[in-house]
Length: 158
Image 1: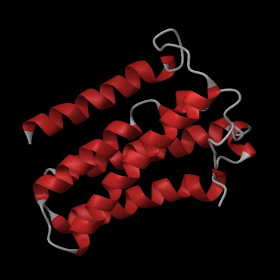
Image 2 (image 1 turned 90 degrees about the horizontal axis):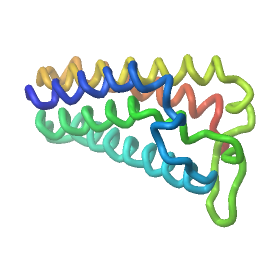
Image 3 (image 1 turned 90 degrees about the vertical axis):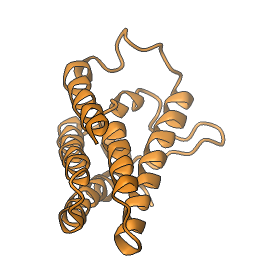
Image 4 (image 1 turned 45 degrees about the horizontal axis):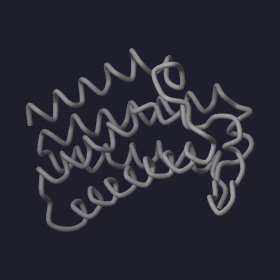
């Protein structure tokens, strides 16, 4: 569990220090189709780990599995995915589809607010998941899910 806690602390520090620089000279420039592909992969990985946690909460609970999945959710949440919403990524490119509403690109302050809320809840989930307190994990999982859904409700096409 010490490794998971260190990973979480490093992810949070990286997000705080590098977050404002995401999309700058630190990363090789990506074409719009690559940005869409990578962000979909990141969010897909996050969703898969959220489903693993949900499965544990609804079935046989494994603290180790939940802690790993929660750390993965926090890592993705703090990874700077916002840099993958660059110009030209607001529309489908060939057979690569995006479900982002145009409003996402027009409401930067609201997007930032929702992203910060998700980061906060995901980091708390990762922290709580290390305790083995199933009741607390379940409550925090709900908050993290709600933070995900808030962005979907506002900025995701059905």
